[in-house]
Length: 100
Image 1 (cartoon, rainbow, N blue to C red):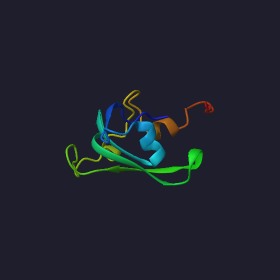
Image 2 (image 1 turned 30 degrees about the vertical axis):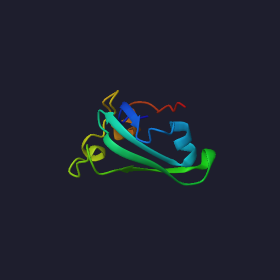
Image 3 (image 1 turned 90 degrees about the horizontal axis):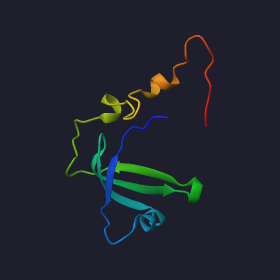
Image 4 (image 1 turned 60 degrees about the vertical axis):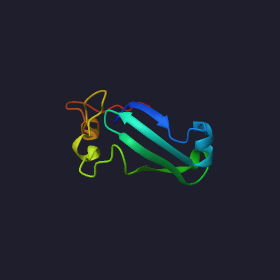
């Protein structure tokens, strides 16, 4: 598993708690993190419960920089420093084990 980013968030819909925002299918948050920063929206695009699908959108404004591409240029885990490709690469001299 890759922990791609970490940090703090703030609900931009100040009069609505996060559980209510989730139930409505719309979360608008400010992220202050090591990689993700600025205003983001999380929108439910279909399904309900465990079968729901969500879309994460970076919104323009403070923290937005079209030139920055952290998925491409900063793919490492903020915890281990490893990339997804490194995690998927078979270990030399033995079989891979899978954990849940």
